[in-house]
Length: 173
Image (cartoon, rainbow, N blue to C red; front, side, top):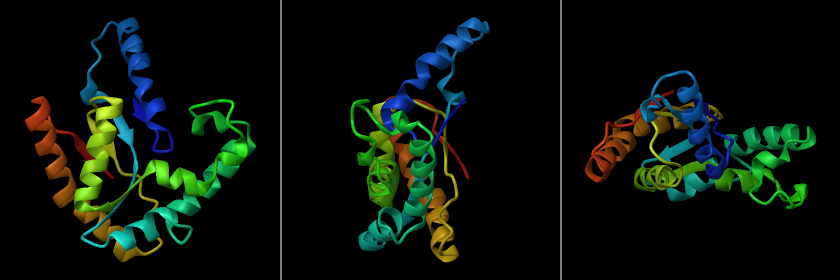
């Protein structure tokens, strides 16, 4: 199974029981190593202002992505995907809010912390998918992916191994 990058952590967490039920019906064990979870991610070496501007502000590609997505989904009657309280007005669902809630952006240490906090919230999963919609500036996009592979994921996997004594999370772009 794959959980989409545009879902709130609470909805991602709700996928595990459905996966377990499907595995049970199919006569096979549920294995968290087979669960893939996508998140929008932007990593900088040490520039928190750049991370906020590119990852969360209206100047960055993530804002554009979530602007398109919220327009289509909210306009198509699927605003429930972006709400914990279904009585919340649709007008509250904005690209600004979605990028702040759904994009992991920051320095290497910031993104490590964000991934681990997300994992604590949703549970163990096997692969973190990195959807590439960050190529407004190709050099920044490449650097983000490089930092993700060379610094973020080794730290995430070390923390998981230390705390949980489980297999490390794979990353796929």
